[in-house]
Amino acid sequence: MSAGQGSTGNVIAAVCSFFIPGLGQLVQGRLLKAIIMFVLAAALWIVWLGWIIHLWSILDAALYKPQG
Image (cartoon, rainbow, N blue to C red; front, side, top):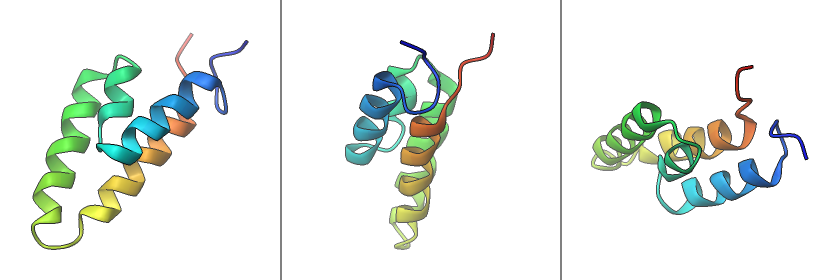
């Protein structure tokens, strides 16, 4: 199975990011992106805009294509 967009791994990562922003990126081994997503979502939820980063995190995990 390919590891590209729509792969089982990406679906699992997107589901993880649905529950905790950045968790999907962490599952994919992208630590820096995971930290960025989590911190941005946490900071913006304080002013009720965290859902934007939360959605971005889900989409980023679902659409991720490994390089190479």
